[in-house]
Length: 99
Length: 385
Image (cartoon, rainbow over all chains, first blue to last red; front, side, top):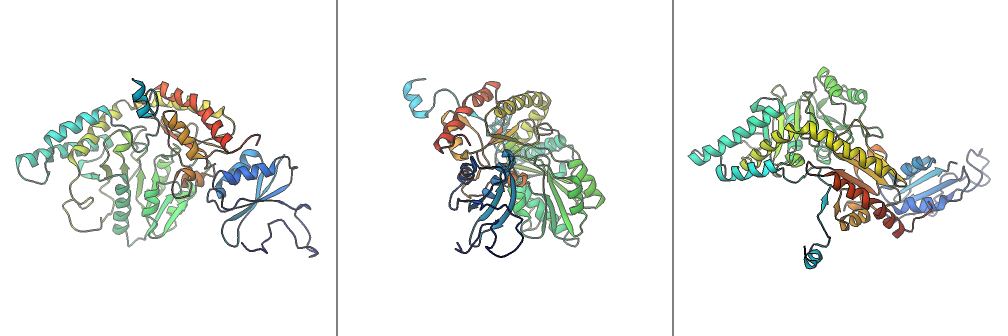
């Protein structure tokens, strides 16, 4: 894992780039090394009691996560806003929580 | 039954086996036909003595019977060693026969793994499916018309989720483009009507209660084919098939076609009942088309459930089901069908009802399922999610 990796949704401090992302830092769930259905369970735990519009980023190396996290979001009324490959192995999936 | 026997078998009462897709218990007619064919048709059908001729006569009768069931000529029916082999051979023979046109094989993303693997060796074009697992016929038609296409392949219905495919429309498009269509009818024959809309058709006796160790591939004579490989009197499947297996497959196919309409109504009712009951369990996704589907297949996925743990819990209650969850396969990869549909892959349960499955069997699953799901969720510490 590259220590300089930044979860999607963060902006460079003082970069002056117009910020289209929510002001708050996204919640990070590091589920690397966990097998299904644990990444989704960790994600659901981290999303509990969060406000609508909060972004949660999940890091996962489980091949099922690519399908199961969007399926969970659909079932729960949340939205997947991005899916990116992690520098070494796995995916970073960003979910914006619905109502 | 004594207490000691119960301890030996590990469960009281009888087993409920609901994992019948691709390998169902033998149909009573298959067993009778097989035993008769072992007595009369054990010999090598290529030998010239009386025993060999009797075996050859049984094999001919089997071919004739399957041809009548599929409404084709006898010479168009080939017995293969198994369904996988039928699909591999169909792709290879058409590709070799049409190499001047191109090598591309167009197929849906939810075809059987054996078919996806057969087309992996060269260009293949995969057409995506919707959330029910159904391919869009226009998208498939577009791919067929892209040029350089040797073969198009589409299943009649999906074995994992039961959704029927628009084979008639795709066949029309393939005909217009002069591209042959291979139809994998492995999950349908014996359960759902057999259409005329195909150029090559693969059927799987193991799925309808015939014996394992034989497959059926029908090829219309107009298809340009060249089965590759060493010369043999049977260029499609070198060597001779098992005569008892081929004969039992043919006889059981006649039997299942005879009661197909009744079994359709009966099993469709049981699956409707199961889908409705499962929907009442919290956080479940019942997948596949609710109406336009095979009569005997149901699939559902439970959120926050480990598929392997659920299968084990159900098995302990005496109920056997299948699963497409990654947690239940050694490969770590979830079912490519569920993934292509974009539905939950974990906590997946697959059910295929046999003709011998009773309403009481389905009720047993409905009875044990909620507690099994709750137990597995509790083990994972899931509550209030």
